[in-house]
Length: 324
Image 1 (tube, rainbow, N blue to C red):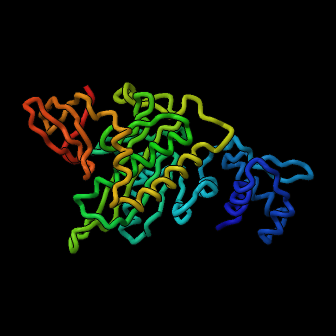
Image 2: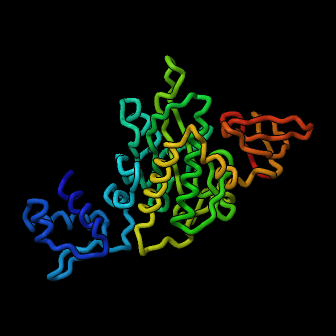
Image 3: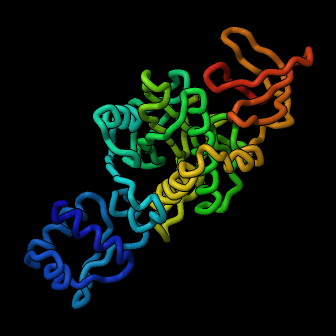
C-alpha cells in the first residue's frame, strides 16, 4: 500500500476528527513533509481534507468519494475478509471480475466502480452507469451449487440489497422477480449473475454477481426514464453514504451466501415481491402471454397461472416479466 492510501486509511478511520501530522509521520515512519505531500495528492483527487493549525488533518464527513479505505470501516462479520478493488471508471465490473475469477481470484474479491462505460444487464441489455451518481460493483463467489440452483445466487443477492437499502436509506425496497429492486415504484437497482460451469462435476466453477445502484441519478435515457429512479432525491452529506451502502450490501451478501442451501432468505424474497398475486405479462420470444403470478418456489422460480388455468414455474433465463 502506497503512502497516500495509508494516510487515507487513517483519516477514514478518524473521519471528521483531526489527526496530528507528527503522529501520522511517526506511525507511518515518514517525514511530516511526506505526509503533507500525500494529503495534497488526496486533495487533488477530490478528497475534502482540511488542515487545522496545531491540530492536524481532518477528512470531512461530507466526503463521498468511494475507495477501499472508505468502505472497509463499515464491513463486519465474514465481509471483513472481502478484498476490495476500487476504480473510478471501468468498462464493466462484471467483465473484470469474470476475467479475475477465471485466473483464480479468490471468493470475496469485489470490483467497485463509480462509472461503467459498457455496463451490462440481463439478456444483453445495456445498463446505464453514469459517473458519480450511482455505484457499480461485482462480487466473485465460488458456491457449491449446481447450474440448476444458480438462480438462488441472484435471489439471495436481491434480498441482501433490499435489506441494505432499508437500513441505510430508510426506504421499503421491493423486488421484481428476479433481479430488480424497486423503491417507490421505480427501479433503483439491477443485478446480473454470470457463472462458469465445471463440466467434470456439474457444479459452478465460479459465479460473479454484479450490482448496479442508482444513488442520486436525476436524468435517465428516454427508453428507461419511465421506470428508472434513484435511491435518494437529495444524497445525504453527513456520512459517506455510498461507501456505507456498499458495505451494508456486502455484509448482507456474506450472511446470505452462508445460508444459500438452507434458503432462509426465500421467505423474505417472497414478502418483498410485488408480483405475487398480480396479473402480469409473460414474454416468451415473440409470444406474449397473460398470466397471474402465484408464488416463488423453492428453486426461486416464478410460479404463474395462464388464462387456460395451466401452471408453469419460470426461470429467469426463459422469460421477461412485466407488470400490466
